[in-house]
Length: 306
Image 1: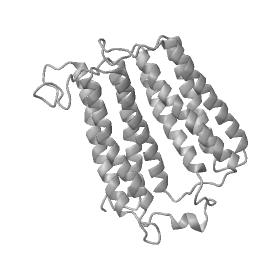
Image 2: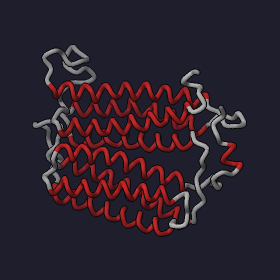
Image 3: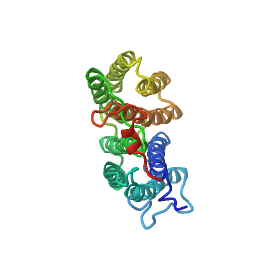
Image 4: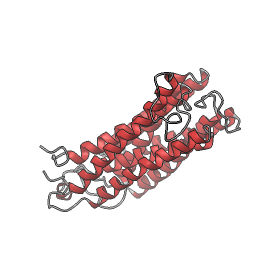
C-alpha cells in the first residue's frame, strides 16, 4: 500500500511532523547547553569549503551538524505531509482544505526556521536572534497539533462562551510565557558558545517576570479545570495542560535553584515544546465554528476516507 495514500496517511505524517519539530527544539537546547552553537562556525556550510564536519572536527561540530541535519528530516516530513494532505478526502470525497493550508504553512516554516538559524550563526549567536529562532519552532509545533486534529474524525467540543474566552486568555498569556522564556535564556549562562554575548538583562529580574506569567497561566488553567469539570471531552485537554505546567514549572524552579545544570535546561526546552502542544490542543478543542458532539453525523462526515 502506498504510504502516501494509506487510510491514516495524513494523521501519521502530521504525527511525525509534531514529533520531529518537538525534537528540533530539544536538540536546539542540547546545542546551547553543550556550547556547540558555533561548532559549525559558518552557514550554510559547516566549515569554509565543506557542508559537513571534517575528520578533525570535535564533538561540538558534530552536535551542531546533527541539529542542522534534523532540518532536512523535517523537510522530508513536510513534503510527505503536504502530499498526504492533498490526497486526503473526507467520507464524501471532498478535499480537506484546511489541512492543505496547514500543510503549506508547515512546509514554509522549515526554510524560514533554517534561515533564522543561519543568521544566528553568522551573527555569532546574537541572543535576540537565537531567541527568535525558537519562535518558528514553537509555531510549527502548534501547526502540527492543529493539522493532526484536522486529520482526525473528532471535532471540537461545545463549551460556554466564558470557557472559550478563558482559553483565549490562557493561550495569550501562554505565548507571553514562551517569549519570556526565550528572553530568560538570552540572559542566562547557556549562550551556545563560551564567547557569545548575552542580552544584557538582569537574569533574576527576567526570571521573576517569566515565573510570574507562569503562575498566571497555572491559575487560569486551574480555573478552567473547575469550569469544565463535568465536560468529559474538554476536561482531559485541560488536565493535560495542567500536568505539563506542573512538570515544567517544577523543572524551571529546580534548574534555577541548582544554577542551571545543562541536562535540566535541555529537559526544560523539551517541556517548552510539550507546553506549546498542550496549549494548542486545548485551543483546538474549544474553538468556535463547526462544534458538534462526539459521535455525531457531522463528525463522521469529516472522517478521512479510506
